[in-house]
Image (tube, rainbow, N blue to C red):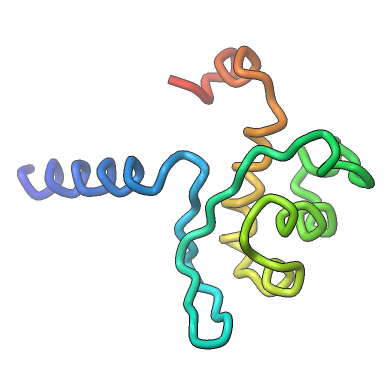
Length: 112
């Protein structure tokens, strides 16, 4: 039981350290000699959503995510297109959170 509690504390500390808009990649991205293991997203402005359909983003449309993610994180379009699918889903989940109002997230029990 003690090991379980230690593991929970470790995970909670890691999440707190990363921040709520940061995703730890299952498959790190290699850029030259640099290895990118985490990606931090910022909430897009309305202008950064230009040319995209909000419904497609809410449905995690791959093409829409590939267009948006380079606008709101340090990865370029080619790197986003080569992401592990599990990492793309994790990033898509963060994007969905940006598009929902706080009350909507609370009503859906997405916020504690």
